[in-house]
Length: 177
Image (cartoon, rainbow, N blue to C red):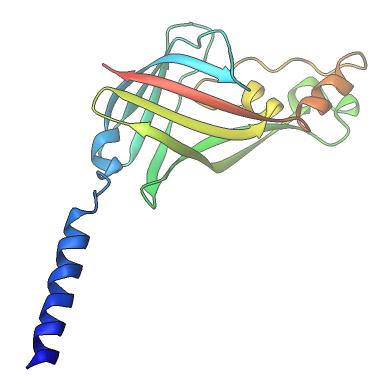
């Protein structure tokens, strides 16, 4: 009988302990909606705003809208993994092999990849995500908005190549519209 009481007490203690643990909310449900970019930082330093709107649809599709007419808008797929990472499909532009011997249209090569952001926080009002990537990938690729890629010349090739070797941390902060 003592063993039964001990076992019941142990099970009761485990049930109480596990019920007291705070469950993390499902980020998939929180992340759907229209988000307006407030801040973008590079290594903790605020960068100029991209004037970006990010629509994350509950069906796994995202769309970006930029207020700047020169910036191209994008869409793709998204998912949340382990309630920790926001993974979105993006187009990454890289410098082609031997770009100075290429025609201007062939100096850049495009790849479609899955990009993983760490979700720092998400609520019904605010989304903060972090990305560690190379400065060139953030600057020239379609991480939400696509800027112009320069013509590669002898005077800028080394600087552009160096950007693709410089690892940086970016934090994107959005508010829900």
